[in-house]
Image (cartoon, rainbow, N blue to C red; front, side, top):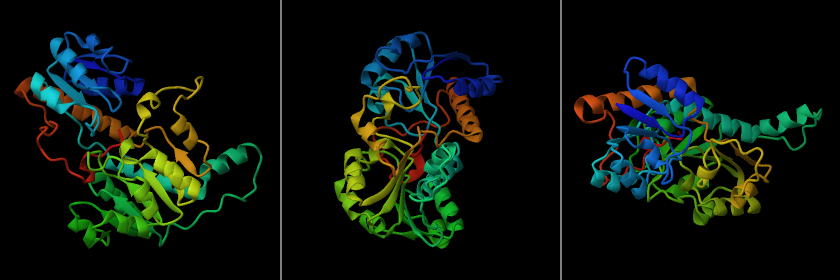
Length: 346
């Protein structure tokens, strides 16, 4: 099968080519993102391979179908950027990588917590300038602190285990409480507000659904324990960025660590160092000394990229052989889960 890979970076090409060596698909690697203007590049392809910031709406899907595309292969877990109804109408199958390395995202989440709390990023900058003063770098022990995890799918479950290892009291909120986690000491809260009000650190690990869109809004910020750290490594639009900025200004939120942003499509995965960032909301975030931003890199490990490539090629191979991928995206009519099963930050 011919696969056109959009939003290609060098690391995408390296891992996909290595995995495809035995499968033998005809792969074309394209740097542009998939959108209405670039969809014609896929004319003649059997499948397109897309990532989180590619646009796969109705207009794009109609153009892909006209060009002969029969499969949309997501090399990520989330699929909120795909119009599943349009794909079904056009007879295009959609598949994804449901899990590649929950450890990668969970470990990056812990790294953000530690860096933000102990102000390692600020210390690094000071030391480079010969400033070894400690004022302004005071943190707190993570040991014995209460950490709340919203979403206990694969990533949230791994994160809970890591935090238990630090000696934290771990709270969780999920529509389907995990009995195995509860047996390890994780306390499930039926109400989100209960978790927010009791946690020194809150980590969001839930997928983006209509129910979780702007879950962290002005009301949720007001319910948060004053001075708590808010960590976000799932899907950008789960938080209302403007509401969180107000929380930072008021001191209600003690610090914000994010690997995702609701308008990241125009920013992340690109080198904009020689450009003015046009997003005023994002630029405002960068002015806070207690905000740490990484550019959607939580998934970015050798193990995760290897599994992404393996699963992506396996999906295409199964579709070619059997007419169905190994990991199809659930049908549009299926209810979306609110656990972290579909969460990824990649």
